[in-house]
Image (cartoon, rainbow, N blue to C red; front, side, top):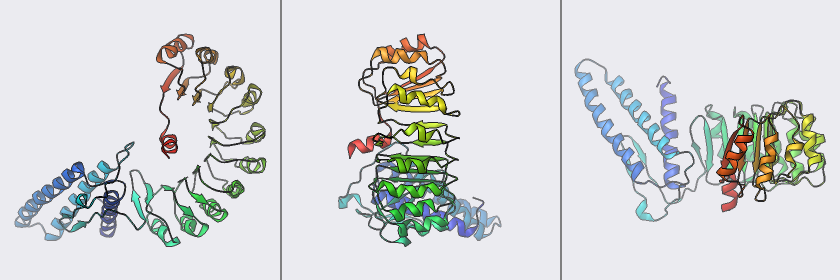
Length: 383
């Protein structure tokens, strides 16, 4: 509300674009959103009456106009928050009966069945995503002007270096690329974004050697690479990222590489995710060579997992997607008295009754049992 006049106009336009893109793309205009629009109209009418009363009391018309715009902006914010409900999956209805014209004072939103032009959809806390298909480098040009975006997700796109090059002029900190087709130029453009602190590359179609360009991101704190074949050369590049505190290599194919020897070169590593890959106890024993490692996630864990996790600094352990884990395997983990948080995810044989037995053996550990994968894995399964 304290922003300048131009910034207010820009905010209103972005909110309108967000609502329009959701109504034409992933989210139709339904009864819930229509009720919000009705509240907008009612509030505008009420504030108009208040504005007229204020004018009679000597308040300028200019102030009343901005009061009305402020109300529109505030209620549109509520509408946007209603649309952007975390964890919900909305399905579009492309029938013509669902499209309608909605008049909000001086703001006109005209939903259409198909969203053809790529749109930047703003979420909460500076998050943004791309709706539609990127075709030219200018499609991301609007991000350069928007200083509020700190996290951007781009999914299901054919990306080139030229398309991503405008991002080098932004201040985004987190970049998420999922199910995209990437070339060497696109990875090089990602590496040129100096403000980036976190990069997520999940289940993308690319030549793994293209990821070697990430070696230049010396300020990178979190790196997620999922569903990629990683060779020894790429590992040697990753091991030079001295600022890296979080490394997620879920569902990656390492072949016969001794990955732990390479990863021990990361001096600041605190969180490591190797779920989706199987390691024997000899490999896991090398975890004690990570002096600052606090959190570790593994899938398809061997029964002797507790013997391998001899690093006393690890206090958070996640065992995920292991359908063969048995009661004795879980109770064997109770030997790890340093574990303060144990997350058991998608391990079909583990029941709440077994969790109670574990708690009696290791009362100082909190256990989280979940049979639902995270949103990314759900998306992969549905696809």
